[in-house]
Amino acid sequence: MDIREILASNLRLARRAKGLSQEELAYRAEIDRTYVSALERSRYAVSIDVLARLARVLDVEAADLLRRQSAPAKKFGLGAGTSNRKQLRQPPQRKD
Image: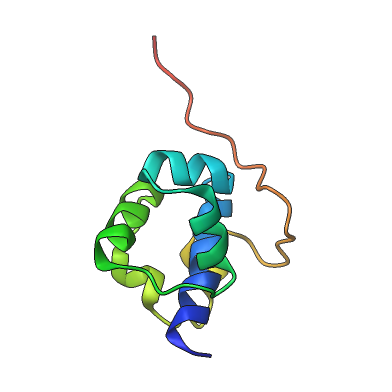
């Protein structure tokens, strides 16, 4: 697995763990949705600036997105046997 494939896999897992669509991640990171899609398909190499913005939005370290994981699903908060569907983890409750 090359570095682009590692990023693609980790980016997809982290995005899904946060319950974000590609469109929402792109909006928050101030990049185009098609660029997120291309990154998740290993089509483009990412710049360090964009990697930092993606990591900030996903609340992970940029290095974690590039690190080969022995158990990436656990790293990004996904349970074993995770499907491609959005996670059902509930967001924190607001205290008014």
